[in-house]
Image (tube, rainbow, N blue to C red; front, side, top):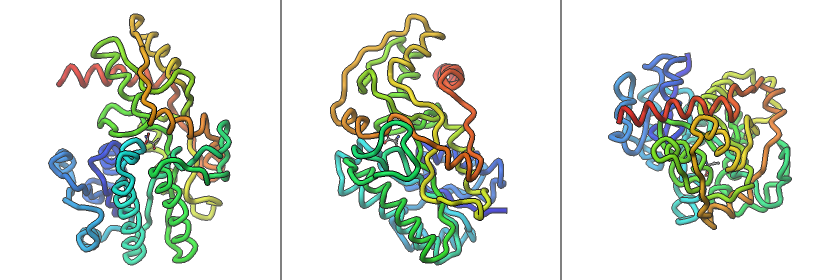
Length: 319
Ligand code: AKB
């Protein structure tokens, strides 16, 4: 049985990854760790929860040793739009959590998963069916620079130290549990909340802007499937393109209108987010993930929208 620690457990992905992993590996075997444990106190109700600043190396080592962890899920990151407000801070946090995870992982015999993103691609990357191995030089965000660094460094630790490092390039992730904060793809979450609350939404990304997106249940499945994959079958490691749907704002609005026919959408484009979105792929080719470890998504825009609207309605009714 794996003994896992999830750092950044209170964030958009971590807050769902912890219960998902606890269901599979047992609650006692999955430690949730976050800087702000009040924010994610509920993760302490059925399993271990530790206060941890991922940049504090000694405390990080102490927690890994206390629980004899053998796998680190590093979910600590400032997202793309927030990163542009303070690039130095974004570098310090994103790279600090990465290097601590890798060094502590290496010294304590842990596998390490650090997510990459569509943000690892830049303006020189082919936009359609973006290949697994392609140009990533012209990256225009500090978030993307950190993601490319994470991919290279994780592969380096695999080759140099024989560490089991693995990763996926996440699309924009859509979920109803924890709101994302400061991402370029956040509009695709906010639209569902505003559709249910007000029947109207002002979109900060231009019509016609395609980006890869994914529903959280598929993202969680991908993480576990990759970490459980037979290492002998992995040609790539850091990081795999994974895709399930690509859409532009008018398409998600049209899908919502199938459930809420009066839903209205206007635009007030955020130039910083738009420039970031324009530098990212329209849609990635994920054939390597499909071939090497059997990646296959369950949700598309239609099935995700049906589920999101139902879950957001339920959540807002209970608030
Ligand atoms: C962001 O928009 O910054 C993230 C991402 C695509 O990595 N959601």
